[in-house]
Length: 184
Image 1: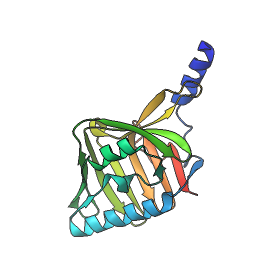
Image 2: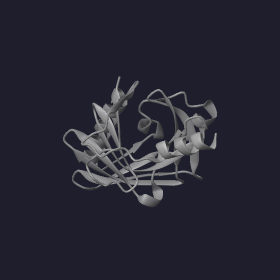
Image 3: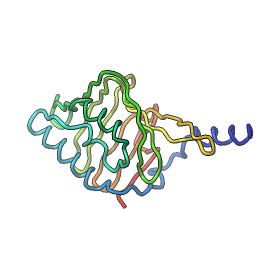
Image 4: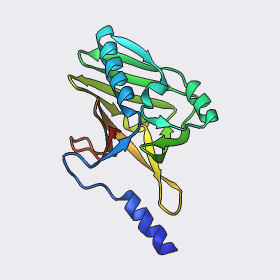
């Protein structure tokens, strides 16, 4: 049993091979949310600021438990503020760190949101990039096979395009994504 636990932990923690883009996982209902986020960030950039709901950032996430949804709803708005043409800051403050699990891309996924979530954005012609502050970043987790305990990865940045969502973990500040999701 211990051997399987160690193997499962090693597999869960192994970085994905560096490729221009990893094999993409299919995620239901992802497309409309991605398009809305791109549109919202473009609008915020043009207007100078915007207030978005936390729910706007949960594109493709389903089966959130009612008590967790209530906590997310009470977390408050996400403030987006332009600092220069095509770029700005993103901030969401809660009373404490919050963790919940839900379905994303057909898998149980764990979300850990820090008390203060901070990022900066860059709007590009076909995408939005969100670069998280290392001390105030989103963490995503998946359960270790056969054990069920979540292993979390810190999100360095996210590339949001209408046809895919790319995640870059830990210290990966490059262009080669660690995880890719596409609308199904």
